[in-house]
Image 1 (cartoon, rainbow, N blue to C red):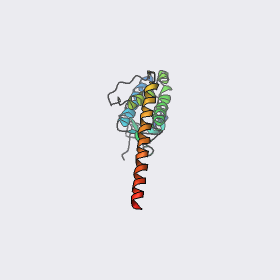
Image 2: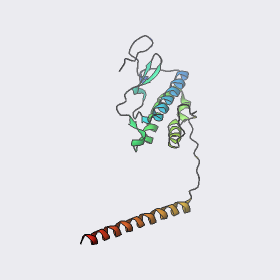
Image 3: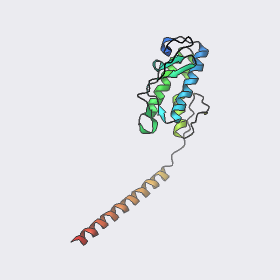
Length: 170
């Protein structure tokens, strides 16, 4: 652990305790979104990110308080937690830069992550453009039928094998 200080060497304040200009809000928001992306690229989600868990050091915002951090692949609520983290900081910065309230970086980041297209340098827009492709129901039903047939064949094989081994034992 280290002491996070402001430019005067004092204990760094929480974001919640300061007022920002529009330009600062945009810059700090972009920096924190980048940090969220970096964490997710390493498989981590903070899980409780808000203006209360960010200190403003002499070099900019520093995310703190990681005990509740989760691994994205191990938690069924990962998408929801990531979106909540991003929405929390976006809502805070929107007080100083209202246009940020119209963005949806959380959904965009998660969509890129799910598709394996998220990396540290991925340009983000704050807009999720969803494309809806029609579902190939016939193909899906064929796949299900094929899997069911294989499973039934496996179950018959196991039953026959068990029965033959049992009759050999007597």
